[in-house]
Length: 439
Image (cartoon, rainbow, N blue to C red; front, top):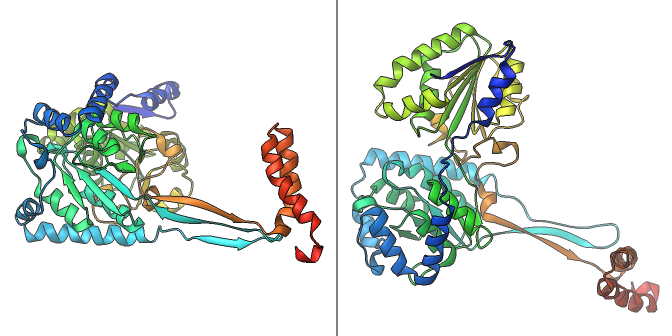
């Protein structure tokens, strides 16, 4: 049964702490297994990839078949119905338009000493995007990762997607095509992450790896970080709905189950100051679950991690939301903008009853790759910025160095770094010997 809490209850803080501390990630110790796979791929390259693909995906490949050919992609893409193609193209156009507005500007200026300062932004050269296979093969995730990379100006885009027993999702390949992906490989798991990080005979290494995956993929991303950049270590999905008394309980139930059907470890939370709405939503969820195609998964998620909290008022609901720092936050109230202004920590916020989180997974425009497990307290969702690097720029005139250089010498000497100080003072000596008008 889902947890039911009331903030006025004497044991609320104790029980709420249990919600905050609930561990939903896979607790299996996969680190050693993943380390062995990464090491093997580094040594044996394509040979290791083909062996792991046969073992884990039930697919026998030779090295020359690890990558999809242009002809294979075209044949699979041709199977996509026109209606689904149009939906993907609409999603891609909206995601692209949203992320183009995120592009930062280069800046430069000359300060009062005569020093020219600034920065410039440049994209990573090569990015690798991981796409889960099997039941969790989502073309929307391809767009959410690949489109921002293209907007940022990434030169080469690689996708790794497992095809268990040879099963290919044509929509995934179409999404890759629409987003401008350059190379698609039918490999998955930790071995795919290792291949993108270190390279093999067939797959040249990348500079950054993004995209979701299972516990083995997450562990592999954690282990290769430093050799390459990564986006984040994402856990099971989560949604928090704040609702007042005037909301439709059936809609809220659908929003909660839209997260629950992702994964048995997903978490759906309702916070409301209205007891009657809480009861109505709970009843609606119980009626809804048996009708879902993924009823077993959604039911397990709701049973083990579902939570309903009744608060004194909406301000208290906002305060609890900040403590939960949810991945997705829906605010279904009469004045959602006002309440959103009181909330600091959320991966993405959806305002009003006509903005279900599910539309954000596909076509609204903002990215659906978001921080989970309360990490919205200190991190953000995927964006163009994840594929850009900022390089600072400085150019000092002799006059500027004369103005600020002595302070640098002083600080270098205080830190015991003699060469630092002398590197500046040597230039100051030359500057000081010149006529002042030459400065």
